[in-house]
Picture (cartoon, rainbow, N blue to C red):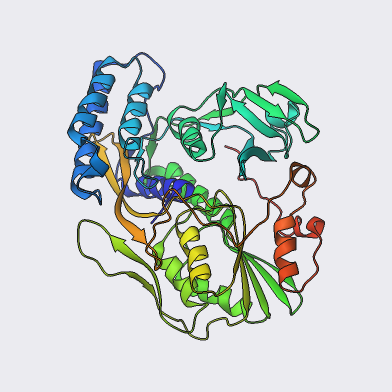
Length: 447
């Protein structure tokens, strides 16, 4: 089970390391399309369309005529004016299923794009949450706490913003984004920050021949990402430990170490804000470390009969009080975890309504070519997950027991009222200013 960043990271790294000769990082994406590239796009649509037909959990495709959908997008590919547009049509075909875990994974772009700022929905409004130092976004005066009203003229919607991010990050990277902003004082302005684009090699050699520079570059990037996605802790003496889990991609032994560390404290805050999900096995390990009984996470509904997802208790589970934090970017496995905590009455969930992106999927990796290989693929949902209350979280998410949202002023000043409130519920006083400094954000190295 993977979603968004965790899905893309795992997919890209696995493809980079799986080929024995070379990888085509991508064609000239925006140039006029050649006959060969159009044929490639149609082949991709055909192969992925067949993968969906064979493996999608709902054989009726929610009433969608899948053959007609594929034919429609084939015609759009045949009239497209660029390869980049062709890839967008393939993505749109899968998006017609309106399924959070079924999406196209296109060939990797040669050019890597960084916009210099992060944004997300807080409640029903979208805000800038971080700005990279020394970026053009910083130079143009964009700051955390700025509300984003429009991007490239489009209004933002909480339930579809992830699609906009997918388009601008994966499918059609932009030289710049035109932002309609409103600062915490209510002043509106338009800003057009330039993105930073760095062009990589068109063909990567990962055979390790001649020193294998490309191979080791891939390894170093993987190590950097693993460091950034590590679990982090903040201890407030004996009464409290705050555990930040950025994704569900940890081994059983790593989760056991988290629980062992929690045992040194009476109370535990588990911060899943921004956690996009990951492995269902990691989810089971963490649930098992907090219960002294077997816990059913969800029943699996798909084409085939299957056993439910069940977490078994691990050695010496943590028995203290628990508060779980979620936000609009908490997705998939992190949502399942929060909902289990609620349904089993094991703790309290605070923050914002979660993403509502909860299915179980598998990645299907495809390729074309021989010596020069183009890799692509798709994430395809194989199971819907039905909680013990008989409901799915897909498109609904987890509603916290108590909604606690940072204000624009909180974001602008680096305050975290959510952790502060969680600590207060546990009888511990922590100011929002101190809470905001617990886990300093670490930007990945620039390309």
